[in-house]
Amino acid sequence: MTPAALADLLHAVAVDVLTERGLDTAALPDEVTVERPRNPEHGDYATNLALRSAKKAGVKPADLAGWLAERLESTDGVAAAEVAGPGFLNLRLAADAQAGIVAEILALGPAYGHGDALTGQAVNLEFVSANPTGPIHLGGTRWAAVGDALGRVLEAQGAAVTREYYVNDAGAQIDRFAESLIAAAEGRPVPENGYGGAYVAEVAQRVVEVERGVLDQPEPEKLAAFKRLGVAVMLGEMRESLDSFGTHFDVWSSELALHASGAVERSVQTLKDDGALYHADNAWWLRSTDHGDDKDRVVIKSDGTPAYIAGDIAYYRDKRSRGADLAIYMLGADHHGYIHRLKAVAAAFGDDPARVEVLIGQLVNLLRDGEPVKMSKRAGTIITLEDLVDAVGVDAARYTLTRSSVDQVLDIDLDLISRRTNENPVFYVQYAHARLSALARNAADLGVTAADPDLALLAEPREGDLIRTLGEFPRVLASAAALREPHRVARFLEELAGAYHRFYDTCRVLPQGDETPGPLHTARLALCGATRTVLASGLGLLGVSAPERM
Image 1 (cartoon, one colour):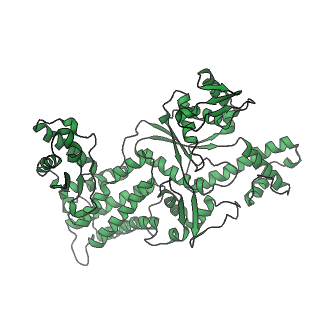
Image 2 (cartoon, helix red, strand yellow):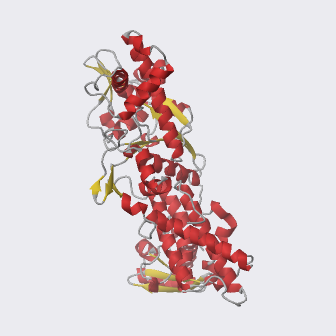
Image 3 (cartoon, helix red, strand yellow):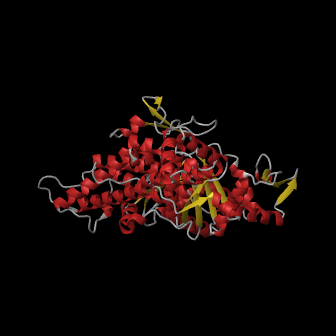
């Protein structure tokens, strides 16, 4: 019996109890809260259902809790129900009911924990979207890990997710990048406000090799060639880096293409025609203050040129035209202002602003021996995705970047996540899976199988703790998707790994010596198989491997 199934049972029992006493069942909450007590001595689960419902029902919380406890103790699957404090209920499940979680995992396999809360919803998930003017830095690397994991979590709840990269290949930063490439190719110093680092010279050399004689072209043609080819080379490198990191995009959208196709002009004209923009001071403005912005935003400047937000307007319209029900933007720490203006864009097109969500990610710092890691040799002023992967590997990088809320500045201790010890969270979780895989191999060698297990035999405290931890997985996935917080999956995996290690140290799974395999061995092996399935599934949702040997 999972927590969700127990919550349904509690609601059904409460309906019966209130009805029998002529009390209004509308007093019951829509959702029943079921939690695991911090102190195992208080039971397997606890609920505040009586406290939440008693006043509306017109009775004392302790009385309602007592009525519920009496009925629950005569209900299949519940071994004991006790009233605690002013009206809490502490519950203990029967071993066979609790072990139903194991049976469900074995039946569903990797699908266990998945839900349908987002079925039928098309989500456009835009993340990374780093300017194609240099290698992907640590902030972009964090989004590469978190964004990809979020996409997987949303899909596990039934959403149809389109992973999208918005290429900012228009504007002043591209001009500065091209000018920096030309300077490098001609052996001149980096221009003021230009781009430095060894990679600039590398990209410039590749442009010169691709288009012979480019340096001899007139300045406008030369600048255009370096813009076009330099961006193409940089994007190729970025794609290769992301692919090697296990992050793949379904769509790469070009800002330049939006302008060249006329999409920006058409989108802005639509908003003008609809009265969604207003004209003042010879410019066109978006009423973004209506949606919490600190000031209205200029869309068309007084000189007639589009402001940056004009591209955002066309891009949002493009996403909606491709069927997106929800547009999630994952942006850097300096983009807080975009939350309100992007919601204002949605409202300008007549959409509910809730169709837009903006997630803001904080900075990442690399530390070694407690000191900041020096700059990248290739990028010059930043640490790149490749630098991190070279230092610790893809798995450790992805897991570490995903296991903390993006609201927090993240300090990564390179020494810690390189260790093969239980202090290293990714090792701790992966080792649990490898240990389970070794156990499965040993069981096969001994001829022990998990076929037709009598799961009611799993009555030891450590067995129960492990089973109840497994039972939390559906709820964790649901909340991770609803709150857009994939780090909840990582923290759950660490809890599960700990529950397994404690179980394994206490409960012997395989027979020893001449001992004949018995029903308890079979049941425990089934529990181990269920644990292995959930660990692999959770790691997969984070884009991290589940090794069978370490």
